[in-house]
Structures are given as C-alpha cells and as structure tokens.
Image (cartoon, rainbow, N blue to C red; front, side, top):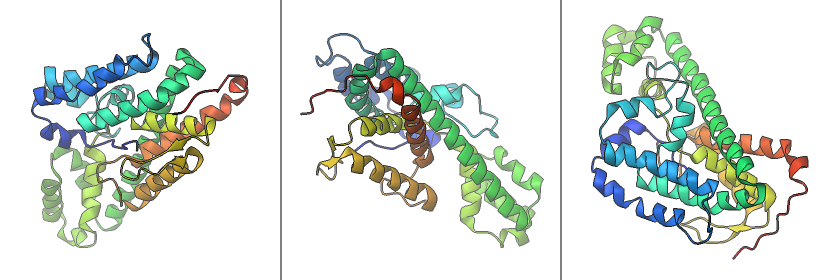
Length: 299
C-alpha cells in the first residue's frame, strides 16, 4: 500500500522531538539509495536523497526550528505564513519516519521503472508536474471549502471581522470561545465541527510527496494494467487496473465524507489531484510514448 499521508505539520512537529531517533529511520532509505538494483545514480535516487536530506535537516540537524516549519510546508493562501514556493518545498518535507519511508519506498518501486522506460528528464518533469498539480488542486479545494464554511457561519449570524480573526489564534478552542463571547446567538446556530473545520483549513499546512506518488501510480497503472499489486494489510495480488482505481475511489470517498480508513490528517484531494494530473500528462504524452519499449520483468 502507498501510505497516503499528507498531514498536519504542526501536530507532527510536536511528536517528532527526538532528532537522533529519527535518524535511525533514514537507514532503510540509505539502503534504497545504494541498492545494487541500479549501479548508477539515477534521478529516482536523487529525489529520494533530497527527501531524506530535508528530513535530516528538519528533524535531526535543526529540530524545533520554527522557521523551517513556517517556510517549507504548504499553507492555506489566506494564512500569513503562505509563500508561493511552498508548492515545491512541501513536496520534499515529510511528517514522520513512516510517512517518509513509505512514500520513498513507493517512489523507488514504481519511479525506478518509469525512469527506466522514459529516461531521467521526462521522469523528473512528470514527478514535479504531478506534485505541483496535486498541491494546486488541494489548495483550490481548500479555498472552496473555506469559503463555504465561512459563508455558512455568516448566514448563522457571524460578522466578517469576527471570522477574519481566525489567524490570531493558535488553537481552535480559543477561537471558538472568542466567537461564543462575541456572538452567542450565532454560535448556537452552527455545529462545533464547522468552527473546527474553518480553523483547521486556515492553519494546518500539508507536507509530503504523496500527490506525486499517486501520479506515478496512475502512470504505472496505465502502462502496466495487468501488473499485480497488493496492500500491506491485505496481501492479495490485484491487477493494477483494478487496484489503483479502487485506491482512488477510497480517497474520493474519504475526501467527500471525512471518513478515512487510514486515519485523520490525510490530504485526500492532494492524492486525487496528483492522480488526475498524472492521467492528463499520460494522455498528452500518448503519441510520444507509443514507440517506447515497455518490456520489463515483474517478479
């Protein structure tokens, strides 16, 4: 299974305090980078190395540095911490060891194959475009959701300036208490989850390469629809042409309903965005790729 975890960077920043323990999590990634499966340094391994280097910087060399957490994750555009470059930097930042390892394991497993078929240049272009596209789509969905939540709260009776103060608070309870004090009548007309969702959308950034990984998975499924894949907790081989759409449907269900089989803090629309951009790129490149040899051995 590809772990689809694009998470609350703030929350996981508090969890990952012990930098040297996090260093141990890099050992399996080092094994991927120096793996004898590819004798030369590939673009896939360079991407893995960059992700590992950012992880090392954030959790081991400079743990607890607020500047890194303010600059690298992708924040909501209305947030004062938002910067345009975060669409790129967030791709190389991960929330914890498991998030990093499973994303990089998927990148190595599927990305190495695509790079071998396409060449390094096309593969890197694909990786960056689907990763950026995932971030753009995730941000667009967040903006739509934020405006909807804000509109619902204004219909309930809140004033615009009361809701604009969301950026002044560092945790949702304080924001909710302020709204209750300022406008108790309006507060009675909304669900507490609405206040929480508005706060979380505004404050919680996204990190991780999962959107790019979903784009890679989509490309793999289109190139090798009959290749057998399986989930870690359900080791039953399933053809990629069934496995990948099922994975995307689960993400769509979770994104729409808020119910997730894999836990909270997951940016489902970033995954779907990466898959969509990957699909569109494959359509765009269809003629160019038609003559490329796709003969590979699956063990």
